[in-house]
Amino acid sequence: MSPASTGASATMDAVTPAASSDSAPDSRMAPGGPGYRRMSFALFLAGVATFALLYSTQALLPLISGEFGVAASEASWTVAAATGGLALFVLPMSALSERFGRRTVMTASLAVAVGVGLLVPFAPSIGTLVVLRAVQGAALAGLPASATAYLAEEVRPKALVTAIGLFVAGNSVGGMSGRVITGWVAQEWGWRVAVGVIGAVAVACAVAFRLLLPAPRHFSAGSLRPRVLLDTVRGHLADPLLRRLYAIGALFMTVFGGVYTVIGYRLTEAPFSLPQGIVGSIFLVYLVGTVSASTAGRLMGRLGRRGALYLAGGTTAAGLLLSLVPSLPLVLLGLVLITAGFFAGHAVASSAVSRTAQHGRAQASALYQSAYYIGSSAGSTVGATAFHAGGWAGTVAVGVLAVLGVVAITVLGSRAARVAARREPVPAH
Image (cartoon, rainbow, N blue to C red; front, side, top):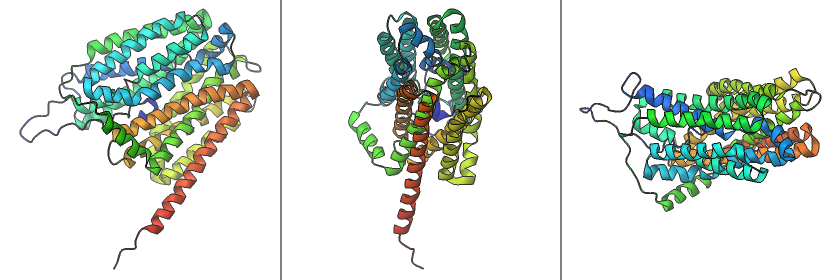
């Protein structure tokens, strides 16, 4: 996943490390220096735990539906509640980390999330399960809200991109392996044992994280100052370009959330009738997204931001339409195209947010993360409802409409840019 798809950029600019003077050595961590390897591994484990927990039920929805006797639209709330909780609490957690410290907030967030994770296997009803997942998602919001701020304060600038890359790698590994592991475990022992295994893995990751992460040496506590935070948020929401970028991120994630929430139902039913373990392994397709996200910068260099968004949207739409064919190889190829298009478009939009915001970039990125996870929640619920009403074609229709929304917003942005260019005064010669 890209930094923005996992939440890693949410607080990238929350703190600008103080520049060291010419006479004083830089005491921040660097590769090969004291504490750097421990710090990198600790945050990698935090990323694994975060995204393994966040999406732990996504590959298990057919089994959850079967046990509780509910439709896909109801079972999908076990995913939507978690991502929705994270979306709502990213900004508040970011503010708390400014006051109480990054390590403190990350530790508390993981402790609550893994504690809830150990309760999830014992949920007696679908309603209880959804509530537990919502609490878990809200707790996990403290990780993307604090991790990169910790790195910005404690790591030398030249090593910062590499350090953040390791945290993002943990996000990707956790998100992918959590789904794969639960799929194979659930095939043998059921979904409750599967989410219990993920909970146990997360406990081990959380304990190791707390033991390994070096104590912060460069954090300076600030006040919560909610009025300042609200003023900054209002300023970002008043910016037309930022609003468009937030909407694009939400729409792309609506497609992605809907497809991967429902795909398990499609593949376990006729004509495919795949076992749960194989369905869980479908999430290995995420590796395609890692590649497409990493090439988004080159795409923008050749096509510009809007051209790259058009290409990403077209690739996603092509994958959606291809997945309608009742052939397993073509469905898998469709998933590859959907994943590649989503990650590329998401990377383009999220990086544009950081470049567009001239102040309060942490809050600008956090707002993007909120929109992103709201899109995930919407995609999970709307996509599942459409599947219940019209089968896979209904889910595809929702995705195509979301892609058309991306195209329409991009076209409006192009027109707004042309109007603004015409209004610029011609310089006198």
